[in-house]
Length: 386
Ligand SMILES: Cc1cc2nc3c(=O)[nH]c(=O)nc-3n(C[C@H](O)[C@H](O)[C@H](O)COP(=O)(O)OP(=O)(O)OC[C@H]3O[C@@H](n4cnc5c(N)ncnc54)[C@H](O)[C@@H]3O)c2cc1C
View 1 (spheres, rainbow, N blue to C red):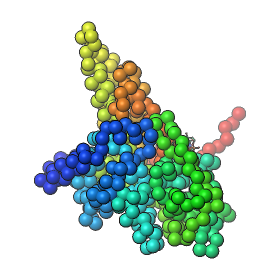
View 2: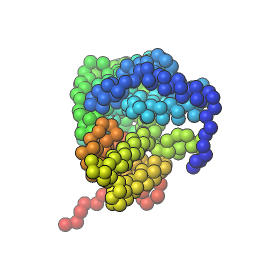
View 3: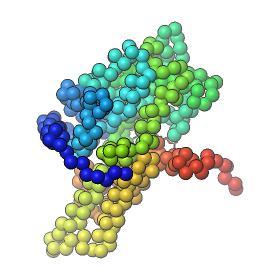
View 4: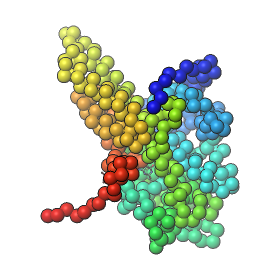
């Protein structure tokens, strides 16, 4: 890992000033508060303004295609995190966009990509089903060919953003008799297609996800991505990105793992707990002077630092587990003062379980690490002996 410091050039400083000015102009605390209650994962007006100002195109294009340089991307990431801008919907859109670029017909690319760049279209992930659980390859949502169209019937759980996005990246079964991973096809379906019903589902952290029902949903074949029954190939890129399976870039300027943004939110919360513990009471006592409190806060900071420095799948597990372990500690130390908005440990406490569920549970990731990285073999789930 490269820990060298990067000296920003004048252009980078100008870029940072421009980013701050944009965010100061378009994002206000009331909108952030409202989003924290609604949990939509996007500030739509700000997102559209980003599209109009060219920020989305520059970020999606990346350095090689004349978009943001690596340093600019890091600055842009940090500036948005500094103010707590919700980016969940844009994050999933970027992951899906790589499949659209790689597998959509030219006609579909023309329809979707420019709309995404302009901030007019967001894309969400429709993989999980009520019965399927973590193993999304057991998909039962059925897509049947009818002339030039497809007809879809089924149900998806936890399609986050289906209520605010314009397209769903839909995993469907196109051959119920086919072999595992060889019977699935991916589609990018406009969410205003008749027959799609989206029901909001609120989670304990204030997030909002959805249940989606598909009843005789008919759309043309141009909304298919990749070959029929080869959806697993199309899905593999977005899934790897969501799992954080890739190695961090050499320049040392990218997050070393997925969910680093939540890791940084945890660091902000821990800093806030230190400030609270350092505030003297009416009689001048500071809880930070209690060695037990100081020890717990010190240990919390060390664990956060370690989690944030741990790469790829290991880091993802480390961040989720650290958050689960530390959130109650920080609440305990902060007492009633923990309930103070986004930086409060109470908010962290409600978020912690979910960070270890979406995009794959930490148990599943631990198994993946054991099997694929440590080479410990495939787990067997034998029936318990009684
Ligand atoms: C807030 C939220 C947002 C989400 N957003 C999306 C989204 O946008 N799109 C989408 O498609 N899905 C989404 N999901 C679904 C999420 O990816 C799944 O909930 C997750 O993969 C777990 O699946 P499950 O809930 O069916 O649990 P199950 O798979 O039924 O798991 C139940 C328990 O069994 C354990 N378990 C299961 N399999 C294994 C295994 N192989 N090894 C060890 N333990 C195992 C799990 O860890 C868990 O404790 C979201 C979920 C939440 C909570």
